[in-house]
Image 1 (cartoon, one colour):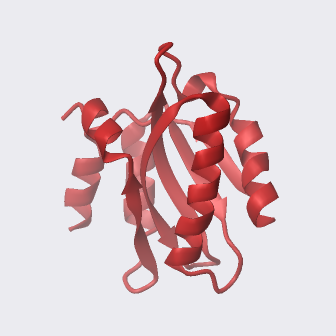
Image 2 (tube, rainbow, N blue to C red):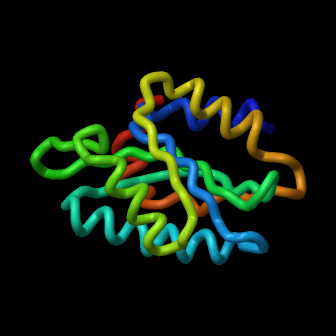
Length: 140
């Protein structure tokens, strides 16, 4: 099953890998709530559409890993956005840290999430966001 998910996620050229910490005892609903606040801010302030997939992992503490893509009408993408600003915004809304890196090797990022961060019974898939954009950007 993991290899199928990895193969599927490798159909995109992801731009950002996000690792976002959550409070102890956070649930998937908590994660989705914070992600909504974060992405609404990102989309509005940067005038960019984003799409993502990811997982919430409970070990060693609750955290989220996302693979993201984005674009706007001017041809700007997530690599054109200042990631540090959005790490700080995550901290502002959660009081937890986030780390965002540009992806230069999508297969490595997907492999890390699927192979290392999906322990059975201790992880949940994040609801994919913006399937319209994801379908538009799918290369497979």
